[in-house]
Structures are given as structure tokens and as C-alpha cells.
Length: 351
Image 1 (tube, rainbow, N blue to C red):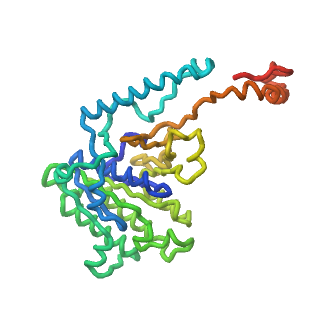
Image 2: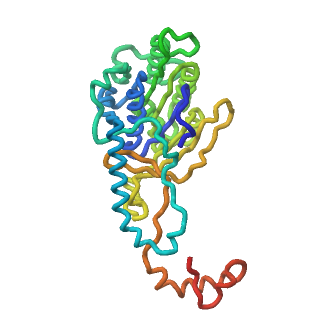
Image 3: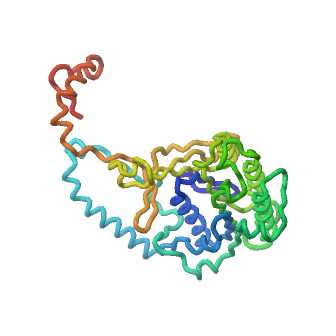
């Protein structure tokens, strides 16, 4: 979906959904993949203890479990075969819609969101944590480059780990090369000491953008990849959000159906929200790329979080052909030229 994955040294920005349910799930997916791959983790948050976040990571599906999951999905498809008789004959010869945005080849690992990762697996990798209330209580308040105190403290911690743990790409590696996965939760929220989510004219409109500018400099010269969730729906000044987007490499937005009209709309009954790919990096270029895949939707199944191409189901009701013939005939008179020339009179259009 993002053209091959997240490159080392790049930043992935996730615009949170309204209640932060699904963005936190993607955040944990990113960290769980790091645990399975043996990467070091750095988890930063201002509202939730990083240790609690790590305890809620989804459990990986082993090869046998993965085959069982595929078997269950095949069984569900066979049950849906009965719905084939309901489809009108005119839909039978149409090409099938490929719901998966990627190829069928397995990439990465799969996880069971109904179970949490074992503590033995978490202890096999090195985890670094940053909890803002604890950090502010340990050291006196500092301000760096006219930047928010919380952001300045976070940058110091990231820089310290990159240099001390051997992730600095500008120097020869003393040990086997590894990757540092950095996860920052709800950056820009009021708990970080920033007021961009509470007012249209914040005191320091450039504090968050300065942080991202320095962070990208650290990422570019280190063996690390970063994921950040931002409550974009709360940022009232859209100019700030545009600058944040420009300072990110990959930008993905989540739009949840919770509390909206689409939640009760039968057309979207199989999905829980939409996902928008706003920006894809074009490495070694001054401009960004735009995804070719549009209309992506996500849904949370019993065990898996899936992203599919959004396609609406066919209209299986017969009310159109019975009650709307006269309306179609009248509208067909307006198509007196071009392809509608044969539809004049009492004949109705039948697709």
C-alpha cells in the first residue's frame, strides 16, 4: 500500500481516527513487527505508560496458526456461496473485484489481535521507554531552540539512544547491524504541553514542526524508522497540519465510522472505516508521490485487522426494475443524442 514498506531513516505519520481506536492498533502492529524481527524499540507517550503499551501488543501467528486462519477464511467463503444465486444474471460475467491492495504473497508477519504477546518474546529484545510525566519530574525544565520542553526532552532521549546503542549510520558498526523502531503516540496533544489542539492561534505554532525537522535529521543518518500518531482532527489551524505533512515521509489518515452516519449505512456494513494514503516518499527526490490505490477501507475482524479496496455491493432489490420503469423512460427522453438515441419512447434503460 505504501510502495514496498517503510524505508530505514524515514518517518510514517498516522492521522488518528476520532477516538484513536484503530490508530493505536496500527501503532501496536508496528511495534509487534519489530519484536518478531528482533529490532530494538523506543516507545514514547505522554498519556500511557510505555510498559502498558508493550503488554498489549498483539500475539504473532505462527505458520501453523496462519494456515488455520486461512482455512477459516476459506470456510467462510464457502458459506457465502449460497449468496451466488441471489446475484442477477447481468452481474455474473463481470470481472471479480480484487479486494486486497497487494499481491497474495505473504509479506511480514500476521498477528492475532484477540491475544497479547508473550512476556518471553518481549524479553528477547531491548525496549527503551519515554513517559513524559516521569521525564519532567526527573530533570529541571529545559528549552532548546525555542522548542516545547516535552519535545526537547524527547529529542534528547532519541539522540542519546541512537548514539549510545550503535544506531548511528555515520560511524562503523561495532556489532551486528540492527534497526531501531521509534514509536511516538499522540504527538501534538495537550498532554505534550502543546496548545495546537485547543486554539486556532497557539502561542508557538512552530514548536511541533521544529521537532519534526530535527527528528528527520536524526533519522536520515541512523539505522532507525519512526512512526508517529497525531490527532489531526483536533488541530484547528490547518496550516500547521500542512507543514507537519510536508515534514513527514509517509502520511496515512484513518477515518472511523464510529459516531457517523456511515456507521448505520448498510452500504458500509462490512467495514469499520476508511484509510487515506495522503503521501508516499519518492526517495532522493524533492517532491512526494501519490498512491495509485484509492478508496481503501479497513475492518477489524475477530482476530485480524485488514485493509481492502472499497467496493459497494450490487443492488439486489427488484424495486428499480418494477417501480421505476416510467421514471427511467422519461429520463431516457433527455438522452436523445449520442448513446441514448435508441432509448426514446416507452423503452427503459436496463443495465
